Length: 108
Length: 111
Image (tube, rainbow over all chains, first blue to last red; front, side, top):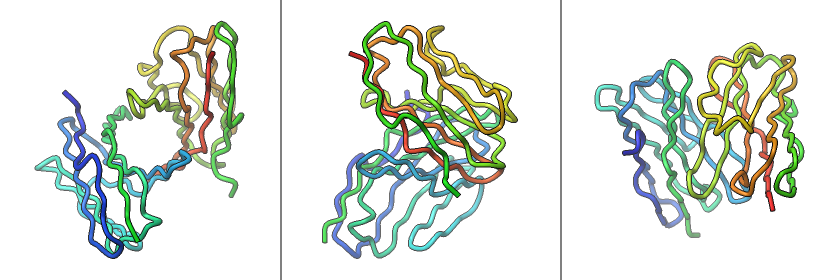
């Protein structure tokens, strides 16, 4: 059983579409991270959140602690958003549980 | 800010050889993390340091792996002896309070 489950595994969208990636976790956490990894391998930390909602540009991350669920939304998607998005749950001991990632392709 | 700097970017070595990966965290960041990424297992946390002290090394696969952080600006991950199953991309990340910054990774191939 995975402590962190992401869905969907793969996602293809047309440019401009609103995109949602979901993450459910079963462990107690101190923070939930969303990471972005482009082809070529570099990893960027998009968000670290422990409650509520955070917004950065066209990206929005939300978390519901009671339901142990987080979502990453991309508004007005663009081909440059094509990447793998990884959800990671971190507990107070700084142990991390990683989702398997969602591979997003945005078609022009 | 140059970000988290890892070296080398690529390393190809023969089985049985010692491999040392290096990481320079962002100045002022007090936590440093070593991760390994493979196709089969995805991202895994190997070890992390807080204020140069190893806090949790439960992710280190076995005794062949060791990590040090002699000062706030430098860390190493050593594999001795290396094995083909160690082939992966190894990422270093540093953080201070909110958010993480990842290095570009070291792609290790053990043949």
